[in-house]
Image 1 (cartoon, rainbow, N blue to C red):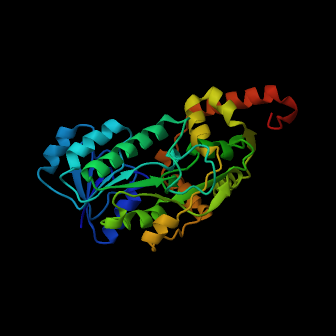
Image 2: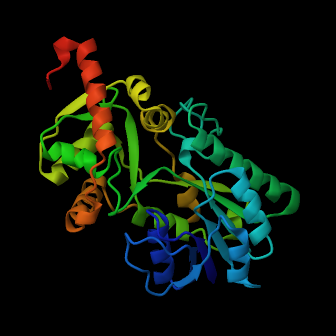
Image 3: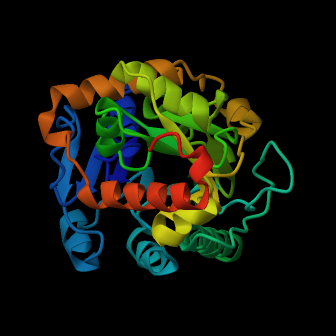
Amino acid sequence: MKVLFIGGTGTISYSCSKLAIKKGFEVSLLNRGKSTLREPLVGAELISADIREPETVRQALGDRRFDVVIEFLAFNPHHIETDLQLFWERTNQYIFISSASAYQTPPEKLPVTEETPLDNPVWQYSRDKAACEARLMQAFREEGFPVTIVRPSHTYDEGYIPVTGRWTFVDRMLQGKPVIVYGDGTSIWTMTHSSDFAKGFVGLFGRQEAIGQAYHITSDEWQTWNQIVGKLAEAVGVEPKIVHVPSDLIAQFDPEWGKGLLGDKALSFILDNSKIKALVPEFVCSVPFREGIARSVEFYRQHQELQVIDAQFNETVEAILDSYAKAWPQGAWWK
């Protein structure tokens, strides 16, 4: 089976490409060839083209067809229109990577299922993903376009510290500085290791039952943000100095950070994975967060080039903490 990944070197797509090769799929990666974080995938064909320049894709692909085309790099309906023109006659299945953040926010009830409405009033990224889904499902209903939609939630791998600030957050802990946790830290969240996500994802390839369907793929390990940061600190080998800050206050200092919180991460959010498990029984998550985040920390320690300090993030954190201390001086223990 011939599989084309648009991307193939990112946090999620790298693990999926790797597993697809292991399972015997004939894997091609279409990208600009600029990613240097992860090792080249042995066994994958590299096709050099820029999905944002459709003519380069047409020239690179010629008259080739693929059993499955997987789109990791479409973020708005314009990108989808381009894909419909490029791949309609080239594939038997087009898999679009959407986002679980497109679901109703906050959700009316938990756990979230694939039947939960797509309605995020806060985050434009999520609304754009929902608009992409709507266009693809229109193409499926009206013209038979063979789409399958996949909605990841917070997925990470060794090359990704899955907290805002990434290594800067870790560096603050190493220096004994306070780190911010949203709200009171008790909202429930799900972290999924990309190697686990890949099991469910690759299991969808070539499945006729998946055409016209949407699936989310996440771990069933539900944790609070206090637990998540605690396990990260454990992997680093420090005791974290956590300051709980309202997400609304964070948004006042950094609107983009705030949108990602108020429209996603600050809300309790758990998902029912029954649908993907019914179709792909081999989808079993085997990397608990404590183990996965330890791998990430070790990977960063072995790659000094990843230990980038974001001065702007540090300045924002300090400004937020200063403001919070002035508003609540009796509780500013970190001062």
